[in-house]
Image (cartoon, rainbow, N blue to C red; front, side):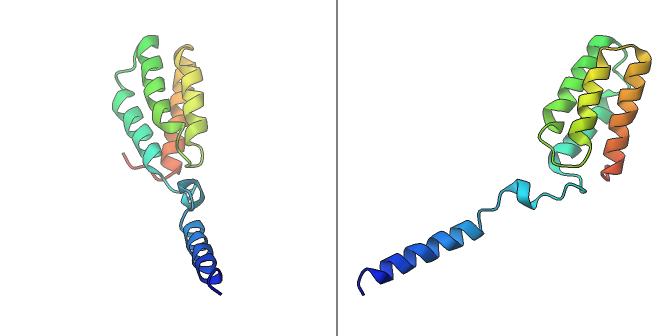
Length: 112
């Protein structure tokens, strides 16, 4: 009997720990704007007008991707990848990529 009580307590403690240890990935709602997506969208909105040169576009895309790639919000990481690919293209490639990322932000609920 002596050994059963500590074993039962240990099992109960492990069970409680397992119940409370869900990761943020499991709790995140991919249809809602998470913190990383919000930061990526904010940075994009702040820097878009000033990104007139290829170097400025690449810098902005890198800054956006710093946040976006850790986002669990639908479309944000993918949109930021498209933004990065379009950043060193011509003006039309940049505009299409920027529109795609902006739409991802708006679809996720981001407000300007």
